[in-house]
Image 1 (cartoon, rainbow, N blue to C red):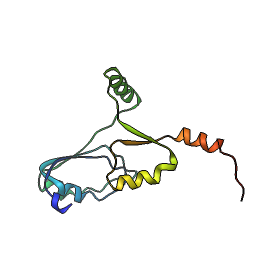
Image 2 (tube, helix red, strand yellow):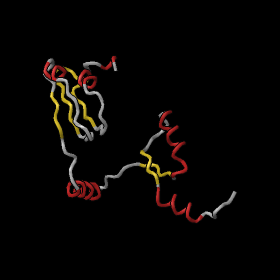
Image 3 (cartoon, rainbow, N blue to C red):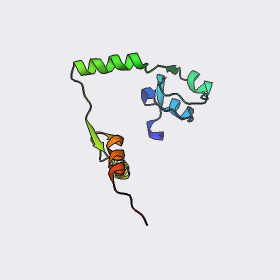
Length: 128
């Protein structure tokens, strides 16, 4: 992170965990903005000097409710906007994690839980 200090005009913070905010503000250029869309369960600590010293801004944005989400999905469907995905079974999750660590992923992984559960239910019970 040291190499990236004061290099970013903006950060969209999607983290939903309580993390230290000061290092993130350090990444922003003067007049930089951080937009919070993640919702940590506890209040975040914002060191005032990290904002005031270089005129930085912290703001929030709601990601939208069910109506907004449905409107976005309808618009995407109308215009043929789709996502490229790689569907995997639950038994492949460890391999998928290894691939993520190696940056060997071209598309978003989607875990097919329903078929994984169906296969598990259909498998004969084993006894030891």
